[in-house]
Length: 318
Image (cartoon, rainbow, N blue to C red):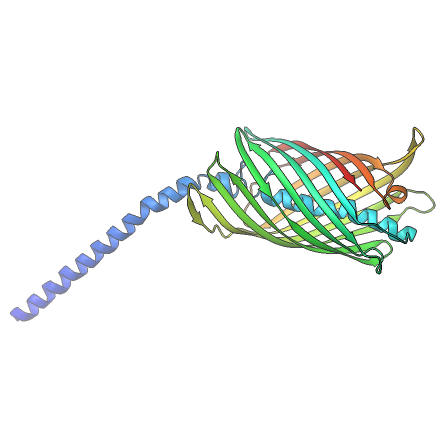
């Protein structure tokens, strides 16, 4: 009996010690968890907040990547659709130099950025309308007074389906860093976009339909020197209509273009799930100038839940 009592006492003490050890281990995790939550306190700021570097506002890495990819649809692809329609033969490669400025405000957070979207298009001489597009958008931004920097290299292949329709699969990676916020993050994504042209009878006017679906995932996030994977993954839908009106001005052939675009974010929660933009641009008439070069200046007004702002763009392709 004495042996049984001793054995029971040993088991009881062992269980108590194990429980205490487990409790201590759990408690030891709490500061780490609290620290991580503090860094993510930023959970609002980094992953889905108004000042997020990754997603949810017009200045974030995800939104800018989608914007730049879609711009290839409503710029280079439309220019090529017109070349196909006009059956232009010898087509040179195309270098694109753009300058974009964005200003936004949401819940007291001021967001601004300047982007230099560089592109180079290799245009096929054998298959009219087919092109490889290399892009390298470089962005310097501000979240309130904190400086941010990002780069989003990408590659796309434009495939003509018909004289008025082209499909463009693409892939991209992105990197954003802010020393002021002690944050950096990486992202990768793939997308498929479409551009379709509808000529309006005997008039020179046209309607263009642009669509994009893309899948984007974070690769790595570093906060205050601590690296982790937030496992952010989003499917993004971007759809728009563009109305093109060629006209003569001061003996020059120009075109005015009006566009309405919606961007919808699915997957990991972001600060906004939907963004709308209304834009107007003026530039070279695509069907007459696009063979060699074209110039375009535009202004877009962006609206989303709790977000208001604008984007000014200057683009020259030659």
